[in-house]
Length: 251
Image 1 (cartoon, rainbow, N blue to C red):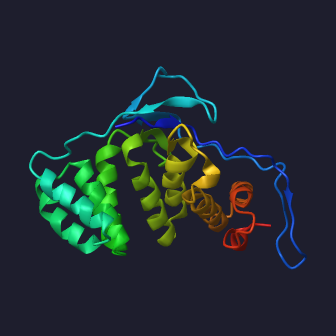
Image 2 (image 1 turned 45 degrees about the vertical axis):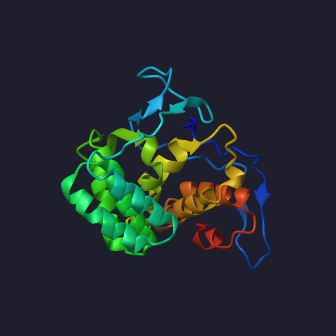
């Protein structure tokens, strides 16, 4: 399996004023500022890196290479897992869920089983069940995270193998109007590390537009203007005609 480069998210494009007709919102993107990620320490796992504990990275600096996924993910349920993967690829999501249910009851701490199970539920639009499954997954892969007494994050774990899980649960938190949690998991996936190969190009990865616009939306409802405008601008840099994000612009 080829390795993938794990880099800090870097969406720094030429900042130009974005204006519209009088009937539409106007926005000057020349002086927007990226909000800092709300963590004192970040630990990346399943990454080969020359970085040492305590090192800091700049946006766009290579952090390391993602380690290969294991060839065997379950001693008892490998066949069921691979069958569920095939069913997922065929968009038979509920069938994939059914195959995986016995396995997660037995291997209760297997993140690969929980991840595929949560993905299949999500794709089947069984969002409440998917949310619970993703919570279980994150309790396994992010078990070492620590928080201060006020609930703000101290040590944040970023698992390179499960970045999609951070993204998916961020969308579920957004649906539930839990905006701070949506931002936290969205930014774990997008702003802090970006999973990609050496030819990574944010302009060609559609999910970036959704992730950026959802951040703008969450900050809109939290009434945090500076962060909201930053992510509106970032969205419009990738998709200048995006109308979804403009409805969440704080003026």
